Length: 237
Image 1 (cartoon, rainbow, N blue to C red):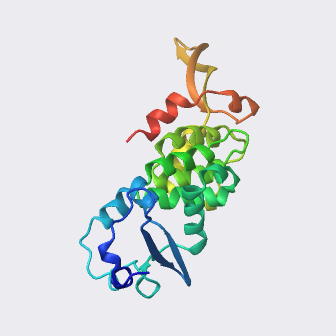
Image 2 (cartoon, helix red, strand yellow):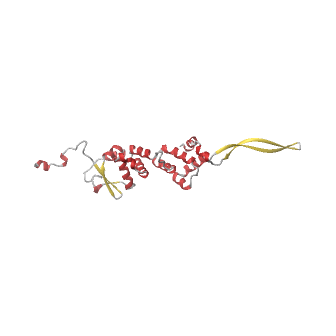
């Protein structure tokens, strides 16, 4: 080995365009994560903008060492693990359970991972593994998945049991009251009434027919009704 090779510093070498990986270190709760930053940069506008910020000395740049990690607050270690598994191991993404996909939905929405967010929405909307309508409304409102609201409200309008107080707290009492309005089945029925009137010392009884709105009992037929137009009207902004 020549003296020139020994004395060469790392800065004198060029970095391979394809096989030189930039890594970044995160601290979540009590765990350090060191991962490649390329997938984050490629798929998240939030991380892409963060990596464009001016960099200082390598030892003091946030994320470049275990002692100067990027601290991610407001999330759990398990949530971050779920995101990374979905991001780094796409082929095993289907192995994530429902709770993990909800974590992916949360973080992908927060950090603008468009592809991961779409994948999470797709996995949480599998007909063979339906999410409870109340949970779906909560998730739709929390993470702005507007396309889930109408089907979830339809399911809640058709089910036999009314919205409970606890469920009302979860979806918001305004939404609960609107659902109660949709669930009230009004029907027109013909009512025959009689009235009496007197003329020239004679009393005569007259019958007439009228129609009025009355509250109908909820029955099994309610599950087959199409509430879509009414729900669109009631829940329109």
